Length: 81
Image 1 (tube, rainbow, N blue to C red):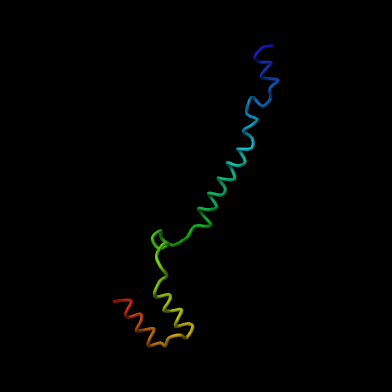
Image 2 (cartoon, helix red, strand yellow):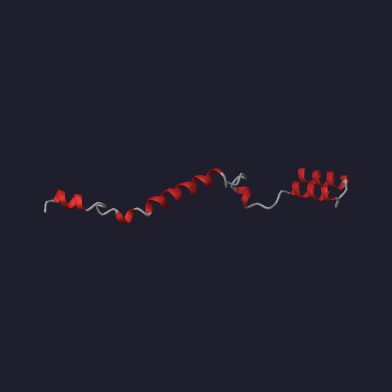
């Protein structure tokens, strides 16, 4: 049997084990693209580890009625110093 007939009879040419890897590769590519464009946290990298914004906390307390307008303005004044 010649080499050409051996290749003709062997349809997978030794690549049969490789077929499950190709869909997994494309799933990985899709996941990375989706992660990059849709699930990205819009905050800067350093802000991810910082605590909550004090101005936002002050505004939330004012919105809930926990503090008065004067206390809110006083708190903002202290934060801007």
